[in-house]
Length: 500
Image 1 (cartoon, rainbow, N blue to C red):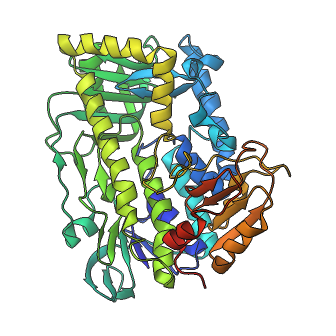
Image 2 (image 1 turned 180 degrees about the vertical axis):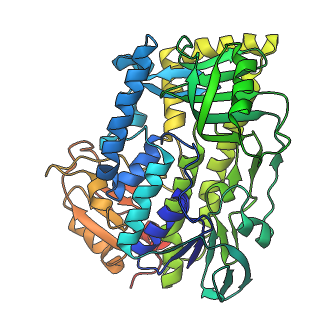
């Protein structure tokens, strides 16, 4: 197995494949991890994916440091306090945790993953790289994929550091300008960019009086914070002439002055990047032996911070299915469900970011609309709706089943022995929960030993449930409350092939 791209998505996918016993080579053209300012947080479903693989302890220290830094910055600007913790924004309209109803059923049993929110993409990449190395993933940095030849029985991959490598499968996790996607000829329809965004970590003078957060100015908007030195601007005068040209301190300063009207000077740039609202998505995520994941499959503006979350979701959905295919026990069509399940979520993210760009404009009509949307989002129902959408808890895969949990990410069930479901999924295998001590249920799953684990336990948090089948990616494939095994055999065959 060859994965092109050693960012968080490629590394997460590599870890998933190694957990399932697949040999993996990751090639990354950059000799060192990219330190350019990128995503600064993850949503609940991404944190749950890390939790289910035992990665939360490594992330906790970083998260706590970030929270302390953010609170200090907000307090210096007259904010802060428990109710000021942000849960996300829509078009720069910030919603804080104080307005969200976390007793909503969609947030039930979220478990310890709820505490992992604010963490930089670079920190995640470092943690995943260490985990991949621990699992035995081969990672070659400074190596570019220069070409490949895909056939019905495998892929010959050509690399910049030597002769060809023969692999069963090739996954492009190589970013928005994916070489794999272009070389394989994936269709990539979408909408052209209309904005220029700039983001930087910088040393500033004259910024002490600036308010924190998203602010609308003349001809655009800007963000100051949530950490010292972080600034972002958005201008609606079209895409940049040369997106690849070095971003200078003068460019950032000029843009910031144009949209804020403030006499701010950018003395030094530590990290800076440009972005647009180019929004495109591959029509399918698989062509024969070649697949796409992360930004290689979908690009969009960073508003709402959904890009990293979308890519990690791709990785955990694809990993176990691709491993099952490699090992030869995958049922017919299993690998095709990767596109079926993930493409609609990618499509939603593109539409979500397009809507935000439309609401950020500075004309008088858009300002009026933004005021209406702001009032709606500041209601309890509006804030809770936004939190549910951004957290990912409303995503549901099209899995057949009568129970309302079917297709959803599994709650972090609390068991009578003091453990939780997330702690039981570290091995990357599916798990059948026998929650009513039913011998018939355990017997029904006996033919899938080795592919599906069985746990007999009492579930304190969901006492009505008697049986739940959890896929390796944490989504529920079957659930009952009546003690019967009706539908279980079909679910096992649908997702885990014929019994041994």
